[in-house]
Image 1 (cartoon, rainbow, N blue to C red):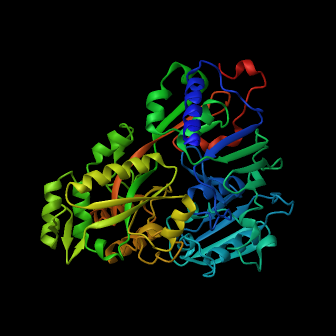
Image 2: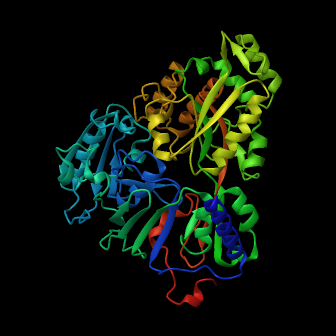
Length: 529
């Protein structure tokens, strides 16, 4: 009881401070501090499949290619490349003089080693299929790599954006259990300094980085699961930037105080939030059940209630900003009567407590939600009430991120509430191809459709964008009809950055494309001008 009242007192004090018109208490200006609601898991690029791990790994490792601010593929560790007329061969010319963080020179042997590691079945990586079409990867000399494909592969250049691994440190080792998952050695702008599990990850700048020395000496990620606490830390200078949830943006982001000390960047995210069903569970194996759930969900109510209008409905596996998006696909309109009719035709009947029953089993399931994501928790609560109206009992289970991932990886779930941040290339092989259902792979819902498989494979081999687009339009139709996911919404990305940080250039790729060149003026008088 005493602890409860102490917490209330602390909260009231924080609210009082929060309302004061004073500048944030800015720390030492030469570190850039972010926050994550979850801790990373493994940092070697082939295992960094969750967002918390990928965000940190991406600062430590480089690929051969990357996207520039206008979403054009440009060289990273590769200086240039040539592609054969038939599209089956790429020769990468690597940059000379690139050093790993331990001082050893990067070479073509590292590229060949990385390819072998990703395609080695002993390594449980979700990215192996990206290199499945590769016939051979060969080092022609120290700075030249030849990649030969069995057939043309449309996402080829993008696929080589995967972080390259250091052969001299990992050859002959068990990669999945390697200490380099926690203390990695890369070629990127930042290198690992310290990682205190569940608390903080500290990166220090690579002074020899090929693009130039980053301005900030340290890049710090603090683990802060609670979004309210994270927002308070932003306000008082404990972190420099964060993604705002809609309520934070609506009620504080437009205030004169907030505008005085923070810049806010808002744009549609390149991804979506969805309910994913375990299609091996008998409850969800019938497509009609999944379609009925889609008809029972009022997406507009969720977007208004959770996102406060800062988002759009999602109709399928591509967000509207993707060139593969099919505008002709009709969404499942909110129609609870139609949902009830479908379920009745399948054999579900209303029980004495209002919950549907079939073969003596109630229509009740558990939806997993990860801790620290307020938007998803609110979404789950609205879904619970909406589905209850048609006789479906939804039970919400909130789990810490790593525990959540473990259940998903092992397929020990009925339904999950998750989101995808997508690659700019619309290849859906890893997420929806029926071969990608092994532990650690991304088709954890076990979706299988032979026509979709065929179209995904064909789209990968089609180099002409317009022809490829036609294939994705059909894929969009089929997946939306099958509803392996209930596609919910595309949220807006809303990022608040302390105004002391200059050099940010919003672009089609977002704001992160040039983060190593962000800076803080030496004169503090210029911080909030």
